[in-house]
Structures are given as structure tokens and as C-alpha cells.
Image 1 (cartoon, one colour):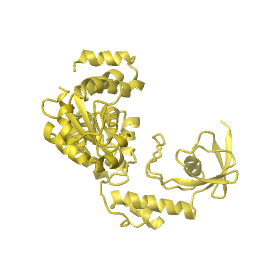
Image 2 (cartoon, chains in turn red, cyan; image 1 turned 60 degrees about the vertical axis):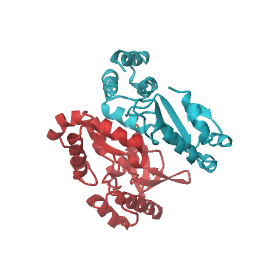
Image 3 (cartoon, one colour; image 1 turned 120 degrees about the vertical axis):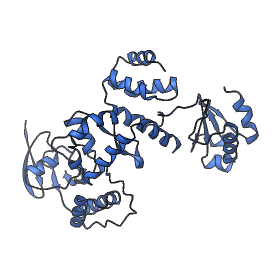
Image 4 (cartoon, chains in turn green, red; image 1 turned 45 degrees about the vertical axis):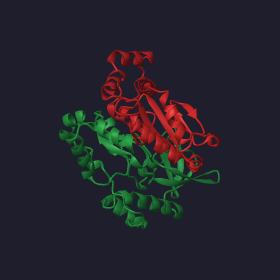
Length: 207
Length: 150
């Protein structure tokens, strides 16, 4: 593995080939905020909060650092006026879904995001996919997954698997950046009405 | 839909998980919807988690998790069809079939959907049944067209 030299926030950083910008920054002690990142899981690039400015050959681009591989001689800026502005917007949009999330509120304070900027639609899910991916990649149980798409996308437990596996695991609850209770609520919902496919299908069919 | 037929479809695609969407499309084409038992069989044979199948089946509009009628009626309510009186055509079809958009009738003859453009605005109002386009529909004509399907 060859070593790659790059500059992050003015600091020379050595990284191995194949590493992401986020990993390189963290190894150098530079923190980049993330919501959907987890060491044990494959990078997903869902929350977009880890965006950074990458300058190579005089061109500056905004990239998502958790899925962007390191390159030779790039200059990375993890904080700039532009980056802060975009992160603030992302946070405000996410706060519309999860206004009471402590992690989001802390970040909002740092970036000056206003939690009341957008009309609230508290679905308590920001689609980071941590629970879904943790269940699939680490636990290999696939008890929880996404259903539907766009604004109606949400997480959903498979009742048959959930009733066997979930009560003794619940490891996805603390992963949730909005509130551990969200997964708990959806899990209970799945177990109370295990006819998901039918009821859900009807909803989609009529919607 | 019986299990053997589902197995046949899966075997046709060499039991390859990469063909999941094709398998689901084939089942949907033959059966008009995806029954839970069929999805469970597909999950078991292709070794794909149910969460994945559920994700895909709810993601694409081509799939239905509820029974669908044998004939799919699509009524265009796009701008061009709308100004040419699509809502009256829709009302008549709703009256004739007894179902609203998104629904299927009891003996699973028709399913009704509204769409926003079928790409042939000059023919508006457009009604598409099982992929066949019926252009310049007048409310009075709809009964004649629907009569041809059973």
C-alpha cells in the first residue's frame, strides 16, 4: 500500500491508498461531523454532513468525505464559510424531522442552525441507515429495512425476524442519531400488527 | 400463483440474486401483484433478505403488494388532458367500474390509476388500458371501450 500525502486544514497528512478523506482526517486528529458514519459499517454517504472542500489542480469541489478516497496532493478544507453554510442548511432540514435530537441540537448550536426554520414533520428519522446497515452488516439478521421511497421512505422491521431476534439485541437503538425511541416504536408497531405487507401495500396502493 | 410456477421463474434466471428485480417483474407480470408467499419463496431461493425485497417492492411503482385487476386503466390527468376534459372521463370511468384511482374492483377485473402525462398530449384526453392508448376519449365513449375487456 503506497502512502499518499495530502493537506487537511493546512496540516500535512499521510494516508494509505484506499482510505477516505474522513478516515485520513480523523487519523490526523481533525474532526469532521458525521451522522451516518460508523467504523464497523461500510461508508454510506447518506447524511451529507461530512462534506468538505477539496482543492486539486486549482479547482475546488465540494465532496462527501466519508465516501471520497484520498488523492495525491489534494488540499482539503473541513471548515469554510461555504461548508458551514451548507452544513447549517442540512442540519435545519434534518431538524425539521427530528427537532428534539440532542446530537442535532448540539451541531445546530455549533453551526448556528435554526431548528424552527422549516415546518416540522417529526418523523424522527433522518434516513441515516445506521440501524438498517448495522442489522445487515454486523448482526447479519436483516430484521429492519427501508420501505418506500422519497418523502415516504421509512424504516420497517420484518415481524417474523424481529419477534425472534430483536428483544435480545436492540443494539441498533443507541446508534440512532435522532432518538433511540424511534427504532423502539417502529419495532413495537411491527410486532403488534405483523401484517405489514398487506396494510402497507394498501396504503401505497391508495396513495 | 403456485409455488412451482414461481420456482420456474426463479430457475429461468439461474437462481441468481442479481436477477431479483427481473424475477419480481416476471411474477408481477403474470400475477398482477406480488403475494407475500411468493416474496418469501423468492427470498428463500435467491438467498436475499426479506428487507431487501420489501425495499425494492415498495420502491418501484411497477410492483404491487396488493391484488391488482387483470386490466390496468391509466387515465391521464396531465395539463393537456385536464383542459380537454380528463376529469369528466375519469368520473365516468369511476362510475362504470365503481372504483377510485388506486383501487381495484372486487372481481379483480380492473385497476384504476391516474397518471400525469403519457406523452401524447395531442391525443388528449388519453386513457391507456393494458398499454393500449385510447386517444380523444369522450365520457360517452368510455363504456364502449371498457366493454371490450373482461
